[in-house]
Amino acid sequence: MGPIRGNKKKRKIELKIDNENVLASGSSEEGSIDWWDEFSKRIAGSVSPSKGLDQFESVFKVSRKTFNYICSLISEPMMAKTTNFVFLNGKSMSLNDQVALALRRLSSGDSLIGVANFFGTNHSTVSQVTWRFVETLEERGLHHLQWPSTEHEMTQIKSKFENIRGLPNCCGAIDTTHIMMLLSTSERTIDVWLDRKDNHSMILQGSTFFDLAEKGERLQGKKLKLSEGTEVQEYIVGDSGFPLLPWLITPYQGRDLPETKSEFNKRHFATRLVAQRALARLKDVWRMIQGVMWRPDKHRLPRVILACCILHNIVIDMEDDVLDELTFTHQHDLGYRPEVCETADKNASISRDKLSLYLSGRLPA
View 1 (tube, rainbow, N blue to C red):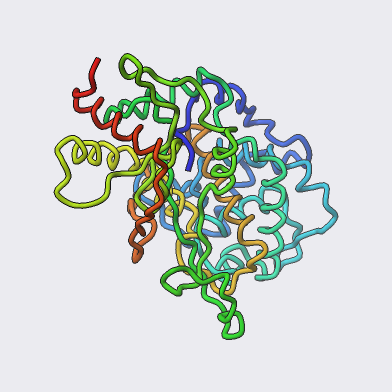
View 2 (view 1 turned 90 degrees about the horizontal axis):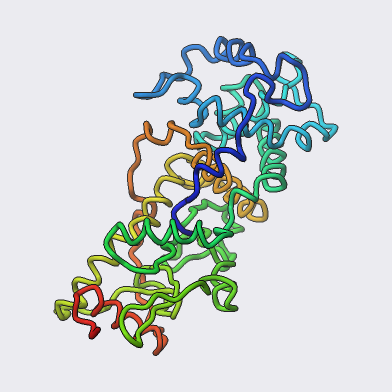
């Protein structure tokens, strides 16, 4: 997980959309409110609005504004392909229909058959439309997953993290979560999909970020002076399952810690909760990756997960109020306890001690 999303004002300008003319191509029917009026009649009684949300938001987990933005983002490549998807009554699916179907599949966690029945189509169409949507979103939406590009953005992020419990020069928090799978008998022999508890799962984590940080392509901004002759570089925080590295600060291990180290751990825990809550919210909103997937296509699964991450950041970047109305569990990996990694870089250990002393007011001036 990266830093707290920042610079909303700038992004809001970039993402501004004319909702009345949202589609660059397609019929006027697709871009009008009439689409939802017609669609809502077909699903009447199928969905009861959640507390604080209207029926549209309850069905798709996004506002109309965000829905329209997603349609505009992917309209050209999505509609350029020749496959003509239809409902059971023979009517062709518009762009709005296809986006709605894919969002429902990803956000509800319902089976292919369940989504097919909801929309009045067959499960094969649900699968194909969702995959086309995933491919197109990956092509057009990756800019919603990016590390802050300016010093100003990073300064804002550091300020937000420091305001949590005082950790200075902290740029983010990291955590992992398991995407559970139920495989067929023949597939269960594939050890690559077994986690440490012998469950079949795929672990979601920003792995490319690790490589970039190790190469010095991340977290190489300004060092912060803590006292005369003492600096701390940019870093992120993670739990004890991660190695202690100069750019990745983990908590102290063991019991009966000195007061300075115990206090540091409390501050560290409160700060890394950002990552835990972000993953919990991601899986609560995009429920396709929340439960146990029945025989997923293991080659496509990473890209489905990526699409859910892109969609989640789109909702955040659009400052969508729907997120404020949803109820979240704050738990994303039930049944798993973090492992303890014994790997510790010597320089990182020194930096952590300096941070601990600084936060306790005991670092010499």
